[in-house]
Amino acid sequence: MASIFVIDDDKAIRELLQESLEADNHSITTLSSAELAIHAIKTEEPDIILLDINLPGMSGFEFLKIVKTKYAHIPIVMITSNTDVDSAIKAMKLGASDYIQKPFNVDELSLIINKILDLRYKDDHIAYLQNEEKQFHGFGEIIGNSSSIKAIFNTIQQLAGSARTTVLIRGETGTGKELVARAIHANSKRSDKPFVEINCSAFHEHLLEAELFGYEAGAFTGANHRKRGLLELAHKGTFFLDEIGDMALALQAKILKVIEKKTFRRVGGIREIEVDTRIISATSRNLEEKIAQGEFREDLFYRLDVATIDIPPLRERIEDVLLIADHFLKIYNKEFKKNIKSLREDVKTLLLKHNWPGNVRELKNVIERAVLFEKSNQLTTKSITIPERNAINCLDLLNNADNLQIPADGFSLQELEKVLIQKALLQTGGNKTEAAKILNISRETLKYRLKKHEIPRSLKETHISVN
Image (tube, rainbow, N blue to C red):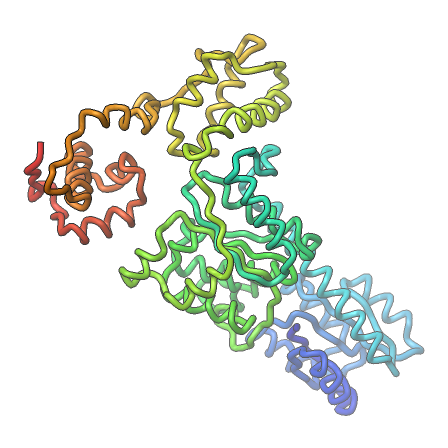
């Protein structure tokens, strides 16, 4: 659906075009002169303008020149008589997108409009891709041979068979949630259409709203012209909402409307825009806890959670570590023009021992740096940089389990959790972000558990009664 200005001094032509184009679900504004159109375009920029060349007062040519100077992005289709082909050619040279002759065929006009809209969507999507900051460096597939990854492969294949089912991907940061989303899209019937993504934690609420839905000219300071939102770019394709658990409640309500009604409004707009896109979301947060805290809408959760994929952390599929490391070794050999043939045995031992709190992303970075600095034809421990505090496998802590004595009258896991949180806060000087990191949980989860266990927020008020 598009918003279209019809500018013609012939009332019969305006009414004919309005009736036929509204039948195609377009929003039509009819105007009898170029002067009226100049005024109207300042209030609402149309997606397309149908413009009669021969107008009273300001001519179609004069209007075309003005619009192409101030609103070059708006396509204009010229309406001309069948004896005035030279004028149509002149208009094309001045920037018109196409022309149609009177008396015109409505079906032909519909084809012209659809062609323009398709080109507009493609151009916008190309611009979006060119402005992406991410570089994938060949990391375009999910690597693994563990049973958990094989199960995810099977789920992806099943979900790819549906073009509409919403999917929620859950997993820690760095596990590859975006890759799973791309794999679903690439194997679906929407694969030839855009895959558009946004990280909800990367934008302030109002900026995120403008990015998602776009905005009309004059919607806020600096909005000098209409901008299409990412949702429009994802029309017929897939829209990936990464870290949706960080989205503000007000925006959650609007995303819920998109899922339920397939419509939205641009910021500052009054027109409902239809969109056909598959919604895939991802989160590293515990959404159930956020619902309990009143920070996430329960109705949205159930709309997103039609199909769920849980990606295990790398430490829980340790058998995939060397396979993934070899994958990145090949990638960075090619990028850095190296010929490192393999990992030395001591390197393999080191990689398998590490707990990988940053998951696949951390392993990728470790191998990238190692390949860059390695001088031999094997990857050695001299090139591997892993922070010492993370180099101990959490399973090592359980090796001393034989020394633990559980009282005969029972033991409170809740009290143990409370003590560990207090210890972490003391160890980090009260820094909740750092405490959450060493406990391997999110900061939001830590805040929830502080409240749950009634642990004082101030470090000075924290007392630990257990050694």
